[in-house]
Image 1 (tube, rainbow, N blue to C red):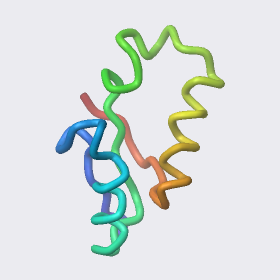
Image 2: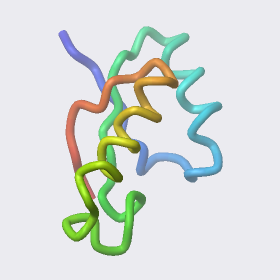
Image 3: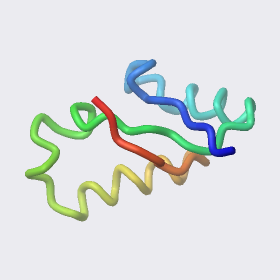
Length: 68
């Protein structure tokens, strides 16, 4: 089973701490929230979106879905 947690549950300033808690709980995925990426996430260049994905991968969590 693939479990994920939505980053809508905490403030962006707490991303690092939340990632550590999720990893410790055995959760390997995170759901991203478009409004936390940019005011208009669809207008963002692919490189900017890839940077968001890569930041979560560095925290040890793989983005699984988007919600908002």
